[in-house]
Length: 98
Image (cartoon, rainbow, N blue to C red; front, side):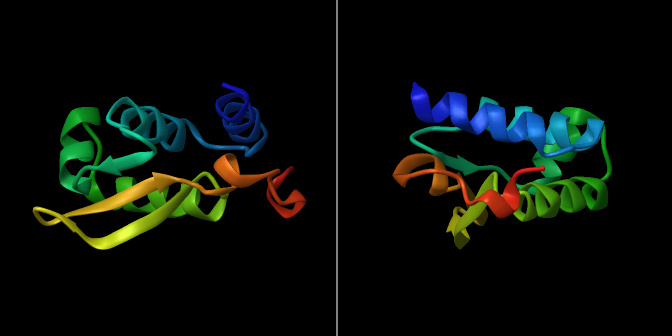
């Protein structure tokens, strides 16, 4: 539970846009054991956004240190993202804090 609190505290300080928050919440709703396996077009359809906006939001979430790519090839053609390892194995690097 402590790590999830750190994750959400970090997300709150990350200056995310509304679209980035929506994408993050959508991805987290499909999270299982830190793994998230969804195609960008699925996220776009679920949120009524364009795929390019979803792609930019995912990049921003990775840049913010919230998500990492676990497997680019993925499962059934779906790339697998994961909640960044920083939230499992220690404190968040201060460079990610605003």
